[in-house]
Length: 246
Ligand code: MG
Image (cartoon, rainbow, N blue to C red; front, side, top):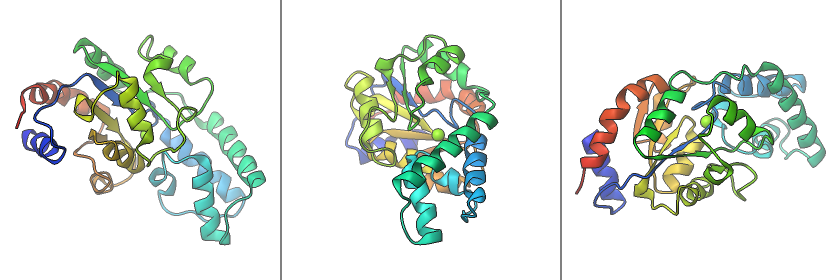
């Protein structure tokens, strides 16, 4: 782990970490919501006889709805979807998601947020989701952890993941931080790409069906197989982060 952290510092021309914040993705990191997203996307496309690829919606996680729909349209119909089609398809997908989503949080997520705060670090949320009730829901499951000042949602950015903009804004919301003052926890290749593009050390938690290699290829420095295994390793990790320098 020390070598991996040193490599990051070297690549990004920092001499040390000065950790102030931990930036969390939401779906597949805090909430066990990806199976419901995947199932509702697949059913929506099946209802229109539009072919989709294995794990396509896990691979596309983090993209805005329009991009995901256009990719399927291009493959099947060799054209983008019309605004009307996008509206209808996204409405159907959202309807099914509300039906399938258990609302369950991932085991270990609440404990990690608590451990981060106990260590004097600020938790920040960066999500491509744009549900109006997001903060209410977060406040029920993780009371008092996130505020509008520490959240970046679909409403805040012009370019979604994999563009670096969401995580660059996450650094700002963390307190105008430099990339060596935060780390990111992500589960999706495009989210990892976005965080790495913003220059931040990125930990992947592989809570879905994709092979680890997809996450490391996207730029993750380290991969844990669950939030509970990340939780177990976090004390050691913070210790090394505090001590490592070039
Ligand atoms: Mg995610």
